[in-house]
Length: 303
Ligand SMILES: [Zn+2]
Image 1 (spheres, rainbow, N blue to C red):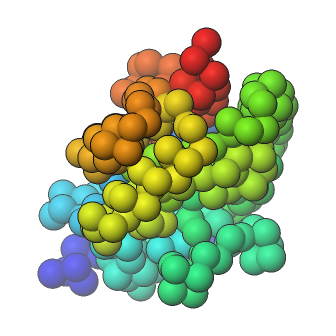
Image 2: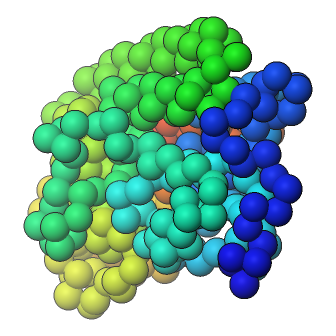
């Protein structure tokens, strides 16, 4: 079925330059954060579609028939590649055989800079967008892939990427400043799943997720109790829900902390693996990162 639909008159010849004829490159991205980078660098020269919209969990996502059709007729697919898209790795890996360029945007990051938590069975933690320094490397890889596919517009892609990276660096400085303003003793981020280890490393937080690095495994009662004990022992004021993970788990932790005599509140909703709704500030990468740090600081400080 996949083979029958391939090479079907698309502009998927990676050696050509779609820019010559004014045809936009057709790019499919998995998560919004990657689509946003493609869009910012490619502007009118690309038509980018994110498979996973607001509230969608990439760890559990499976490609629909229409996703596969869309992928097959794209010039390229841009994806995380570090086991983030666990349910569609096979589909994504097949695309190269169908003549669709496959860009794993994390390939440019030195493996030594990646986190490899033992509980994630030898795989790297895929949530690299929460270290804004690492994300600039990803943005540079997106730029290089677009330049390679469409050299006619190289100067535009390079200029757009430079401007975007400068914005990310400014935001990185803001996040650092906001984090540093919190007392070290209250810099503990408790969330629904373990998406914030890169955030923790770069900005000096302790993090705990109820579910692991992936949401593929369910949290047990023992996990809920252990997290409630951590929150109560540390006197943590607020925990956070994630837009792409159901909040029952976090609510159970709040109740379990209450049963231990410690009141903890929901400090707000933050964006982990999915961005917010298109057209809102949180519907962009820069906007979701800013929302997160502002929500975390106000939730933890109570101000
Ligand atoms: Zn995740």
